[in-house]
Length: 167
Image: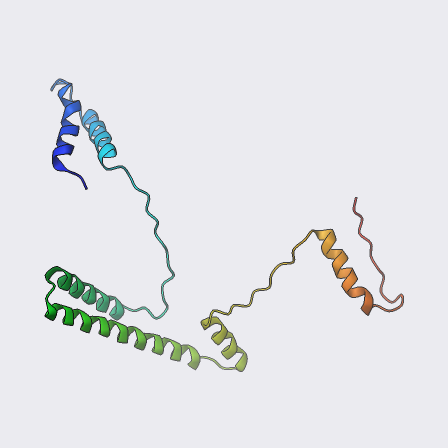
């Protein structure tokens, strides 16, 4: 927090050494920047970027604003009636979000036409994405492993065996 008296002394000390006729806008700007950097240095903040929920709507936004307003009033006054008002708004927000989620998922499942789409949708909603990991190892190593795996199934000279040049 910036103390006004400390800011005033830090800002006026460099200006007192200058003549009034030589004080320019650049000098004032530099002095102000230097003083603010000393008293209030910049601080790095981390902002987390979350994806927007697909069921989020304007009614949820308005309900959350009313809930926050009621919470601020309750925390300021500490009155029981304001706490009850806040609890009512909190309950309303919870039910609105549940209803919006329910409607969103019902619409999603109503658009499904086949069993495959149903399972793909349920896997997506449950967070079970199918990803195939890439093989690890060098190219030569991978080719040799593939050849070893295929060798027992190949009988006779029907399939030629390829050799890799390692040069």
